[in-house]
Image (cartoon, rainbow, N blue to C red; front, side, top):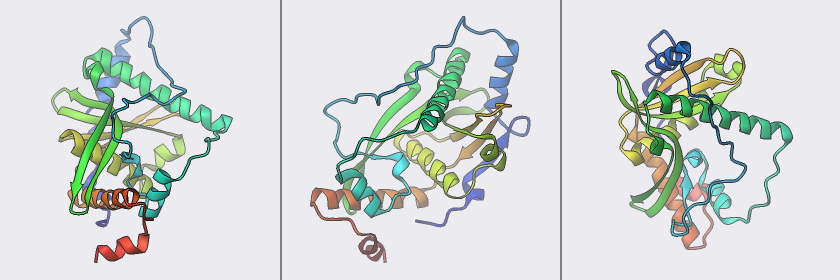
Length: 245
């Protein structure tokens, strides 16, 4: 994968200093004219997908996994996942923030209901063969006045991480996830909207630019692993690395 250049891919935007969506959310909330109540779904089960979908579908969140990690994830029988009470609350809190802002943007008329939690599947063809990518987009086609239409992905985080700002592998992971969504949907503009879960609940915007030098190597890796799985042959990190030389 090409070297990650955060300065090239992301421009950090904060409210009052170049943010383009947050000011509209702030103005809406300051006006204080809301529906009688917000209805927010916090799912305890994963949504059921159609039976005719491809069985092997890599997820956008798999972007940084090695070939061996991908092979193990999609071939080995999974044991029931144990989630601690604290982690359950953390996950539910994140889902609450997603639903909260989705409701707000829907009431503001900036997004249509059919473009909220939009599930996408993309067939990917490379020189190695084919594979499928999939993911659930938080908000697609958000019309920001004066700035066009945007794909928006929420990331809720504690105050320490929010104040530090996204960096390193976490920044790369989130950037790749949004980049894949943009490539699959044809969206020209993408944004990570960071939400501080602790008081004060500030927002920070990160604009994402689609970079093929980062996306295409993911497709190559996925198609390699998909071919290994179909042939019932283990994926090997060293073998894959040699194939790139």
